[in-house]
Image 1 (cartoon, rainbow, N blue to C red):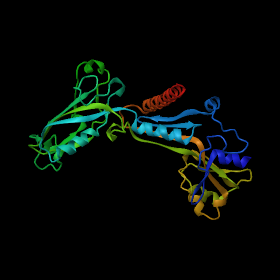
Image 2 (cartoon, one colour; image 1 turned 45 degrees about the vertical axis):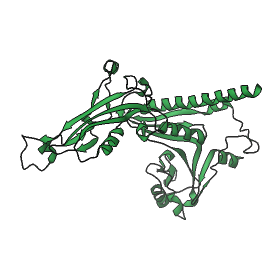
Image 3 (cartoon, rainbow, N blue to C red; image 1 turned 135 degrees about the vertical axis):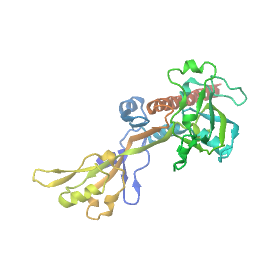
Image 4 (cartoon, rainbow, N blue to C red; image 1 turned 30 degrees about the vertical axis):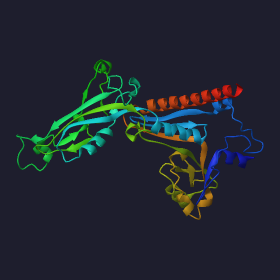
Length: 346
């Protein structure tokens, strides 16, 4: 029975393959186990633990769900949480060496710090309004610096505006936007994103309209630089490993995974210090004399999520919005089932 429980709860890493990867979240998988889905049981087992929030990075654990739901949540973070991004670029003048199409593409990928929840989706055939559009202006011309010495090696010292960055993008408020966003003015996420390089006589004069969209329509709307998950590693020491073998065992894993402590007999003995840090390289399986001492597993329903925001919204807000999107999908599905049931009855 213990072996079956281990198979049900863990994925086993072998030298050349992975065992027990199939889901068991449905009835009839194993004799003697009731795997019928139950809301009360799910509520008891499911929980989210926030491990770290550091600026635009967030790490949290999602425990007690199936891989299908975890992956759905990841995909929603990537493609279905809306943000604001440049959609229309109006080029009035561009004498730089960068083609207007390439410049427009670069501007479209600039992340904008604006709360999309305060804007509506814009239809293609509608005029831009303060409720669905953000306007920026980029107007810059390169000239010689009259105060610069002729023998300076750096062209950025010799010329003014030789480097065009997002710092030079100016927000042009529309309608009541200035009052609504006075406490948190709309701007690019970073000031030092390079857009183009100019030399004397070259100029750029463009206007850009930013609209609300989602990543499944275009990658520029994706709110995250990355959103990924991995299963919680589980390392089991099957026998005592001491002395020089313990030192070798430590080097087979990521730093901080295996520790060494002194036992009652005064020997240095290896122990599992923090399995969470392991990246599962399986280096230990290359050592014939150590491979039988360790069993490598992953906890099937314990997902470690890493979310890195582009800066448009904090990562914890993105997670909250992704949960709302997932709930909306579930409600839509239930509504469709109800309508099918009513149709069949009539």
